[in-house]
Image (spheres, rainbow, N blue to C red):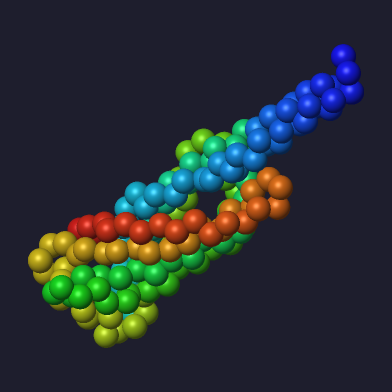
Length: 152
């Protein structure tokens, strides 16, 4: 074989190897599964927000942060209700349930929620971002949004 054929063969093999390595890293999938009232008093209301995190890696990863805002539907308008955040959540391979409590202490907001509770359900929208610590030092922001119905 002459030198130009060997060089061309090496170039083709290198190109195939490099192109196989350039596929994007798989991203965890996050879904809001629901919400429930976990405690209630005259001064505050605690909601548990239930997420499902699907880790596509064969090893555990850590969620650097999960941050979200909760809104309630007031007529045709979404009104801010509360903020939830948690850091350092370990996630095993496959689907993992994650529960994050959110405490609402503002009396005006509680009053608004209670007035909607008379209709026997409250529609909430949860909008947030998960930042996983992936292999290779990658930490993308993965957004999620979901509407859920809260029933007393």
